[in-house]
Image (cartoon, rainbow, N blue to C red):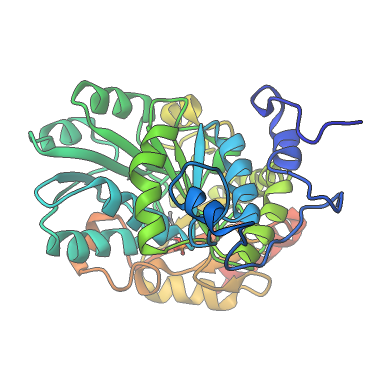
Length: 399
Ligand SMILES: Cc1ncc(COP(=O)(O)O)c(C=O)c1O
């Protein structure tokens, strides 16, 4: 009889890992992944319940702690990212909050990139400040600034690369080396690249975090998040926090996300194909010379770093128009792309970060994050490239 899960996924290709990891069939012998919508699990006896609660016997207790469908998602994302273990969370922000609150204590110090998602900055300024966790914010790509910010209390470096929305990069290997020399944990938000395009754990980061809401689902359906990395760190410190505080992923969302992950490698190639075409075409637009940001462009300022650590350059393009008025004119005249605060969908999406995703930041934080009034973020979808090109070019005529 064929065994259920006999292969070591680490030796197989990304598409095979995405499709075959995380599948543990039930006695029903289902082919597709089963969904376990249950809050709790039953025990054979009071004694068994005691033993499972006492960690003397393995077993599910309650879906805030573990759930087979959530475990399938965790196995898939760990297999793709090359991590020993993954912990799923209810959203990307739940993953980031869980990392901060389970690994940092009052009196500790965090060095945070200036260019991170707006809610990450807001969490540092409010929740972490209230808890007495010191935060220094540094320019993402400036390794000297990271070094200078280190104090005897620094426990963690946290960055996004590429950053949302500016697409600024940091040399992951160099930052990891600096962190390691000082006994500091490096946590990277890998949302823009996904494990298909960039593998921060292999470059020296201890943990990655994901908003699964973005490319991992890839179809704009559900919220979710994940923390991936070292088994011991995750099980000893992060999992107990999740178990006791409850930012857990719903099994329904986990099932949707597993279906999303199955096509992630395929989708990322098409996102990259389309974004490369659109970026090159827009960079040649007479009004946009030097105003298109995309790490795959030949004249991108951080091209060497991009080539060093990114397999391809992702699906996000930014346009740096002069004013908010121009940005709004461009956005309002797009016909195919929809205006929304998400990214990583099958459809092309457009966002004006200064007034939406980064709108609640203090003005100085927004400027430091590089979010100008004229900045437009395009999340290039899976449509036919010619149709996206026609749409962005006709919208530019109105600017
Ligand atoms: C880079 C990045 N990290 C984290 C998040 C937060 O994810 P979620 O919306 O799933 O909480 C986002 C959301 O846009 C993001 O873009």
